Image 1 (tube, rainbow, N blue to C red):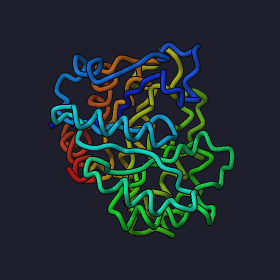
Image 2 (image 1 turned 60 degrees about the horizontal axis):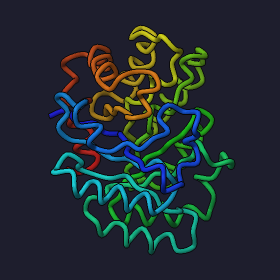
Image 3 (image 1 turned 30 degrees about the vertical axis):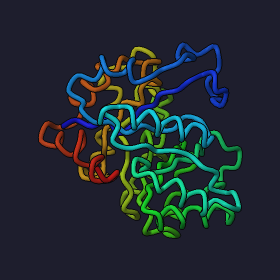
Image 4 (image 1 turned 90 degrees about the vertical axis):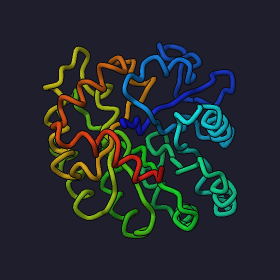
Length: 269
């Protein structure tokens, strides 16, 4: 079974997608009806928030419940820095389809937000509730990740989009160092996703190989999971092209883990 460990759906009219500006070709509604014809061999998915509101989380959970078993888990959002975050997290975790939460670090002005004292009770509450933390970080955030892991060793975490390496700019060395440190010093997982939108237009598989080889070397197949990042991926690739490219870049013997088992184990389905 192939698992897509990271995709979105959204409804523009709700008005909470601040990053989704009208100039982007993907600034329209996307639902599971748009995704299903693209899935091919993919049989299970994880639906991830794209707006920092609990209204988004409720929408995603409703979508998952109506997906006829396709969506096996939802990664939602609540304000982890709020005074009532532990209570809100406990309430949200009552829904068995909610597998995790994701603060959108890349959109938060304070680079150090994730290690602020106000956020730590929320992270502890997540661990207590059996939730996972999806980390939407840029390379500048990566040096903070070992601190997060050390403070919250019981909180399962996954780095989305491999920390968004600047592939098009060729900025590999610092990112690669930080990724190796995270892999060595923590038990975190990492998503093999979001790479084609970080590459230059007209990218080829070879443009991505150094990045994917490094991820495999650092995390190994048991801690690496493939995700489409649909529909964002369509800014640089079709769903099928990215899946086929990732399958070419990952040795066939590692496919059962990277394209299924790691995500199923991490998210608990």
